[in-house]
Length: 84
Image (tube, rainbow, N blue to C red):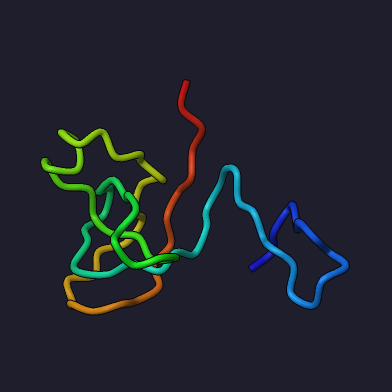
């Protein structure tokens, strides 16, 4: 919503980049507060990180800041953090 970095500003929409902080994120499926968020099979949409995702070493995007148990796609706020 208020990005610190916009790539390709000369283009009509530009690409907004979030490196750290509170960020709105498109999530599919139910998610609970403090769950890890990872990539899903749908481009541009994240999901709750499961045990299988951990075994497959999928990356963690951040932590969810809200609980939403509805199925389907929705916007939730996540906290993006840099890991060492």
